[in-house]
Length: 86
Image (cartoon, rainbow, N blue to C red; front, side, top):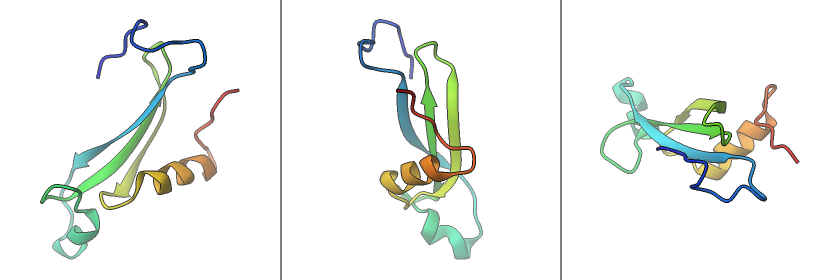
């Protein structure tokens, strides 16, 4: 995804946050936990970046079946959390 300075209004925005699924290989016994919307195992990757197009936070490793809200809650409560400026 390309982020341009003209893509988003900057007035009340501090950056962008999104999640994606990365395909991976896991032991057959673990595959059901990692199965995403497709028929193959995936892991969720949460990433945040500023409008300078530099990543400010990346969290990977959650199973493909994990909800976005659970991953965001975890990112906000870790020892080195996702920080949202005010």
